[in-house]
Amino acid sequence: MAEKTVTRERAQRLSAIGLTAAQSHILSTLQRLGPMSLNELNAALPTDTPPSRVVSTLVDRKLVTRRDQVDDRRHVELGLTTRGKKKLVEIRRVEQAIQRWAGKKLKKLPLRSTQKALIALADG
Image (cartoon, rainbow, N blue to C red; front, side, top):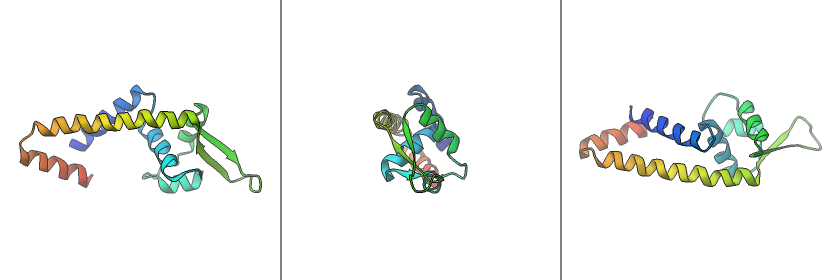
């Protein structure tokens, strides 16, 4: 239940900056691992859902670039735009705010309840 609450809070805060959780994951993955193909991105994400639609939305919003490889037109390289990099600053702020929010919530609980909540989050 704790994990669902944090997930819901995160989704609301990301929505306020114009992103979904999936979009945030893709931008963060591209920042962490650098430019990559759609297949490489798919393998790096923690979901079985192909990211192609989400990537297309990010490309349309000018947060991600999509470049065809000269030697193999089937291979497309994805990367962050300057605008995408700026959006990552907003994502970091959201993540920090969620940590503060969760910390305040957990601080109000007795120690045993806090331990149970943290275990539930870790097992998620």
